[in-house]
Length: 125
Ligand SMILES: [Zn+2]
Image 1 (cartoon, rainbow, N blue to C red):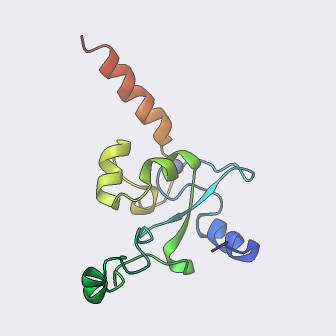
Image 2 (cartoon, rainbow, N blue to C red; image 1 turned 90 degrees about the vertical axis):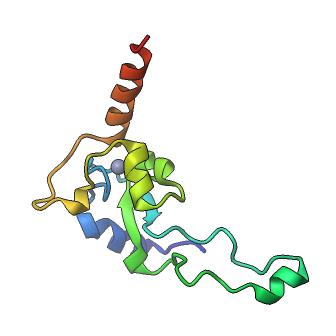
Image 3 (cartoon, rainbow, N blue to C red; image 1 turned 90 degrees about the horizontal axis):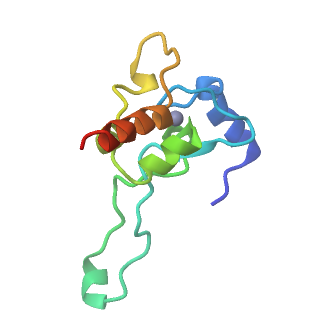
């Protein structure tokens, strides 16, 4: 479902144009809306009727509700995909998320962190 322009504006305003995760400044022309709780992969019952009979939608699935939508840079959004927040933090190498930090200043962009990690990996041998 497409997210309306008004809703996009409200999501942007949550952080005033800062990535909710890494804290970098968002490009107004190129930023993503992240579903903090990922939307469920399966939204319809499985085809097999034996499984379908037992199937229920995941009660913890994310929705398009404003409370589940956060501004994110393309890099964070692509890294996060459908990972849990915990796994995303490990994957991205962020020490903490912008929203976890009091004062909410800017922190190194996840891409910088990832690039420096790759650099370190390349120099290992
Ligand atoms: Zn980010």
